Length: 195
Image: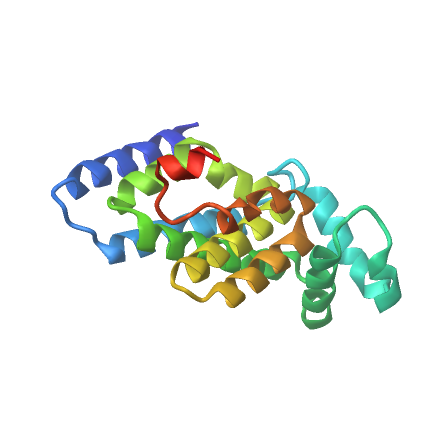
């Protein structure tokens, strides 16, 4: 509990210092890297499904390609496990790779759209998103794909955004609900709500 309170106090102090209109990208990078390393080098007992995910990763060495289509997990997540398992047998390395992608997506999204990086990271931490990166691995991979999809879509690279969003769907079926960004106009006015 002391660790959480310490992290929150640091974020609050950084947020107060950032209200002067300074968007310090180095501070954002250091904070993201700090949270990335905390969640990547965790025990198997931290996170709701971490132990189950590690068992899936360990079992990938005895699975052939056809067996990836079977089971309750989405194909993209199983394929990701399979490819990483071909390179390494360490679950920690798997977490490092998986979390690198997730935290890169959060970093890009916050850097692009936030007016106060430290406040965004404080909210990321306090609202439980950080904890979810330790337990909801498939969902976080899908959200990372969708965050990058939105960034691509917003920068007029709609097809790359669509592909990234589709890849997110391969990691978690519930990411289908995030596809609403393709029907919401850039600027919402009365005409959008009146049919």
